Structures are given as structure tokens and as C-alpha cells.
Length: 314
Image 1 (cartoon, rainbow, N blue to C red):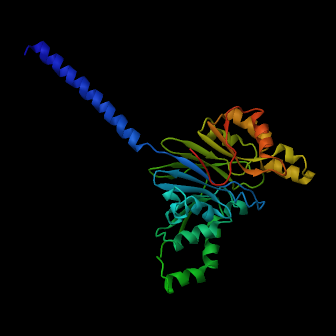
Image 2: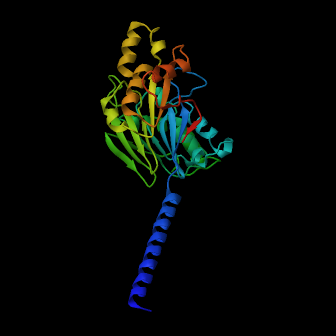
Image 3: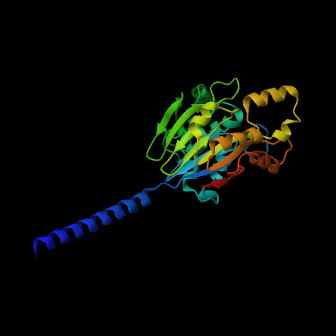
């Protein structure tokens, strides 16, 4: 074989090898690519609406679920999404729930804490619960554990012995910045604008395929804007601009300082332009879902999905 043919043959094999290498990398990338889903567990407020449980969400990534807020009913809603109760998410079997992030210590966001600490343990969770949230969370967990010590001791040492780890909580009281990272997700906390409550946060979840922001309870927040530009999903609280008209003067002052109206949310979404806007923690005050959507769409022409309990968003 001539030297020229040898070089040509070698170059051809090199090109083919390079081509197959690139295809292999692409194939492996596709097979390791996350398929992140957002589950609305509770889209409600302090008002005890039986159709909308206390504020709670789950970010499901690969084989894990990460809760954001744990309002009243959180474990029942989580169970509804698990195969044990007809759901499709193995990650939502409550014994598998090991991570939760609290935006702020208001009862509609944290009222399910005792259930979150104890029920997964009763159902077999054998590792500690990892909790992240504002100052005061450690005290809440400590007091709950003390309040249920009789129940805990009964399960540990009675006729139905349980493991000694699953009821234990490891609590990290947070400040702004990256607060958690594993192979599935990086979680960044940021201060929002919940009126005179300073220990109040939003969260940015970053996975291989999505960026999701949870506003927490907040009025319009410049700090939130820094973390939310062009994200895949923006879950943002809202109250009805129409319903607001019926409130008394003192409640108008409060809500305007602590929360975001449907008209203002549309203006905000126009500026940030998330791929999907999910209005949640919805204060209707007698207004309809259609009126809230109409208010938002006065300014924002993008995709809007109004939150409802047990909704899955991809």
C-alpha cells in the first residue's frame, strides 16, 4: 500500500472514530439527562379551602423528591401521588421523602411539619430528615419532637419497634446563597419581600434540564428578579386585583405590602419572561380563576398555568 493510501486510510478511520465518539457522548448524555417535574401538592393560603391545601410543592428529579414548604395536609397530598395510593411517582412514597425547604414560618406553609417529621418514619423512613429554612425552624422541630416524645418512645420501645433514625431531623437555618447541592439539584436561597417579615425566602432549583423558582410569599421583589430571569418555571404567589377592591382599608395596606396582585404579577412576568408562569398561593376573595388569568394576560403573553393541587408540570 502506498504512503498516500495509508495516510488516507488512517485519516478516514480517525474521522469515523471521532464520529462514533461524538455519537457515544451524545447517547450517554441523553441517558443521564434529568427529567425534572414539578408537582403542586398545595396551592392554598391560610383560608381553609378543602380544594387547595396548605402551600407545598415537590421537585422530582431522577429518583428523588425535594419538598418546598409543608403546609397542612402535605403528607396526604404526597401520598396521593405515590403508587401506594394510585399515583405514578415512586419518589413520592412518603418513606422516600428526605429533603424539605421552608420559605418562611407562617402556618399555611409550615403547619404540616409534625406530619413530615413523623409519618414517613412510621411508614419506614430509616434516614434522617434534612430540613432547610429560616431562623426559628430548629426551635419548631425541637418543640414538635418534644411534644411527641411519648409517641416516639412508644414506637421505639413498644410492641411495634421502629428504627432510631427516621424521626430525627437535621436542620440548617439558612442565609442567602447556595444552601444545598447533590447529584440532582443545586438549591439557592434568596431573600424576598414579605413585608415586615425579614426571615422570608424564595428558592432557585437548578437541575440538568430545568431552572425553577419559588417566590415564597412576597410583594414585588427586586431581589427575586435577579434569580428569575428567563427561568423554565416561575411559581409565584398572587392575589386577585378584582377581589382586592372588596377588602377593608387595613387589609389593603397589609396585602399590598406583603403580597403580589394579579395585575402586578403580569407586569413582573413580562419583565422576567419565564417559559412557564405558575400563579399559586391564590387569594381569590370571591373572584374567578378566569379573572386572575385575564389580569395576568393584560401584560404577559407567555404560558400561564394556574396552580391546582396534584397538578404535574413538566
